[in-house]
Amino acid sequence: MWCDYPIKFDSYRGCEFGCHYCYSINRDVIPTPLTSVREVVSFIKGKRSKTTNWCDWMIPLRWGVMSDPFQPCELKYKRSLQILKEFADRYYPFIVCTKSTMLQEPEYFDLIKECNCVLQVTACTPRYSQYEPNAPSFEERLKMIEKLSKVVKRVIVRIQPYTPHIKDDVISQIPLYKNVGVYGLIAEGYYINDSKRVFEGMEKIPRISMGPRWIYDSNWLMEHFKEVKTRCKEFGIVFLAGQDDMRDLGDYRDCCVGHPLKDFIGNKWNINYDCMDFPDIMNEPYTGHVFKHLSSDADYRIWSRSASFKHIILSARFAKRMDELCSQVSQLG
Figure 1 (tube, rainbow, N blue to C red):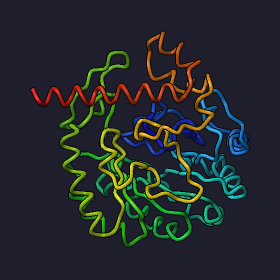
Figure 2: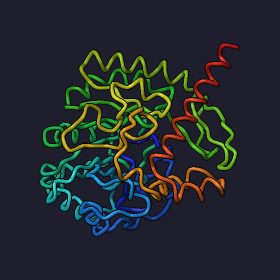
Figure 3: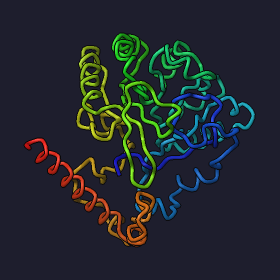
């Protein structure tokens, strides 16, 4: 409901980088190929499923969400290379997220320079090396960014996850990001559902049906992000807030791409925006099927399967506004 680019896929199930902070439920799974080349090509050609039938335009795909598409097993399976070839041949827009340096290798570099691509690289701080045991170093990622920033649409550095002790690191690194051609930063606070991987200072938030989650206080994050944003502005780097409740803090609400790009037409009909001129396809029944997983309530799940995308989004916007009003009343005492 929040994302401009909600249609995503992974080349693999599981990831070899072993990042301590990873929120993927498949983080410890031995990596194996997941999404087939045929599935990607099918979507590019316009075929839609129950969960994507609300979208009839060339919405950019988001690649690399629950695992890294260019992790070491890629050298064995070459699944991402095959998909990259299709993206290059068809010039279909996509956003790819990685912390690998494989894309600078000739076989991959020669393809990605022919793609319609926004590259996101996770590169928070050198001190995160202790939490990313099998990933390339921070310095190696910067070298790759410098090379790829010259051939892709733009490079965005992901400061995800953001934790208390890296503020000074991030602020001091902004000149480095500028020097290697970075367009913008995305910042999002660390959160986790696993009590064994909680960092100091996190708050436990009870949830009715899904178990507790540990997060950092939003007010605290807001103050940190404002400082980072101020430093970004000094160097002409765009600041983007990946935190759902802080999108307005970013220079653009579109936290994946930033300033509009040709061919990168996202889904603006979500609860971040107030636009009412929904595409005709979103008025069709059964286009709300994609939202059935948002609640464990049986009545909601039954309703969402047959409802329209527009109806569900308008209901969510209303609920969000009511929550905001209740919060304001509480603050007034």
